[in-house]
Image 1: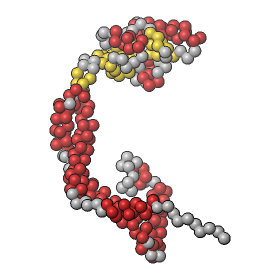
Image 2: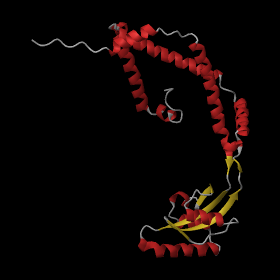
Image 3: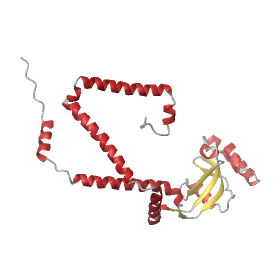
Image 4: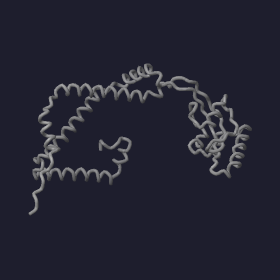
Length: 261
């Protein structure tokens, strides 16, 4: 149960059928193991080696969890360390100037639809400039489902992120509320409205804090693991002759089968 992800654990635990299956699986595994033990299979060299490896893995994983915990900085320490990285690597968090626009897209799926699509886009532009609600018109008419439900809002984007015709029209808008003329792209006809501009600057620490804190914690935990590995390396002395003998045995060709008479 501990291995079930936290986000779905409540759903699993409240489903009787699933829980019964889990318990049945655990019982079956335990019962089979007991029978194997009774039959002396634990003394089989290959089984004994596998058991030893499994035991080593469980214990070593538990130790690594302990090492990670002891090397995990507190929330306050992690945030302070994240701020230091944020300041030291300011260039990584620089953002170019960005614009935010809404758009209405009238799709052109076939050349025969071109004139009608252009006329519809022009009519919508006329309505917007006469005081129409751009967001409402986008929801009702835009062929871009991703932005239509948000009133045509595409969010902030930097220069060069959109197709050339769209990009040029977006960056030509100066004041919030300004609208473009009808423009054509490979997708169809668009009407754009400027929502706002964001000057070049640095991404706020709050936007990157979570990722930086996670990075700090991971780095500190890895540092602890590296220190542990270093102490273990100092205790290792390889028996090269034994390793070679084992390899030679494993790669030796199988003896030929006796010829049939």
